[in-house]
Image (cartoon, rainbow, N blue to C red; front, top):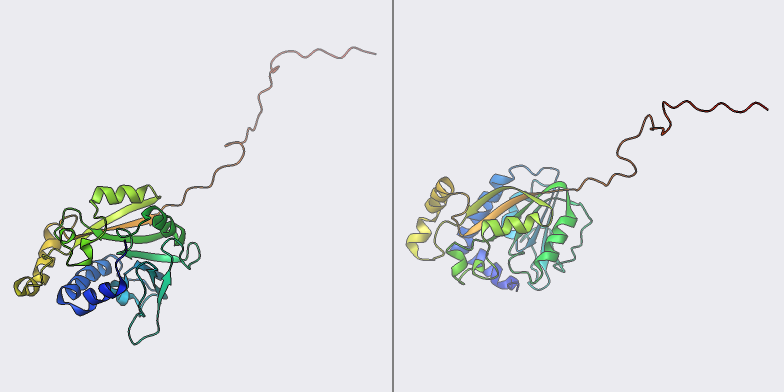
Length: 248
């Protein structure tokens, strides 16, 4: 079940822990995609907090928010790029997204199969998507004081297998949110240090969230007709003297 947009906005923009989480996730996303000039960047779920770096760079940025969650105008003080949509029917043409990121969009969906089908439809051939989900083995999935404590947490193997079943080819995986999900002063003051240490020591699976980057695989079109032309067809009677025609 999707969380309410007001609760998500309150966490990410009005709490210290939410702002720290936003910064940690956004830094990892930016490290994966340092240059999006000339691209269409699309977010689904509640991806707005990590889309801001692309606003002044990408050709187009769009934040899709599912109807079960609700929508908010974003970014504040600038032309709105957020859109309310059905979670399995996005207002985008097929192959129109060069980069796609899901945050609070997959693990909270009641129909993740259809969501992944829609992701595949809108992603351009060889386009890249980034799926951000709670880590089943992390601390953040075990506490409901943050949005990562809701929905279905994943292990890395579970997530990659699900993505492969929809013709996505996993390329890289990262983790984030190595600091504990606590608003206590000590953890907040040392949060940046925990993120640096976590990325250095175990950037793959040990964080509170998993991030898997995939490439869209496009199947080769089926071949029509014979795979190879027969240049010299075999004649059954080759090598046998043919009878001469009877004179009239």
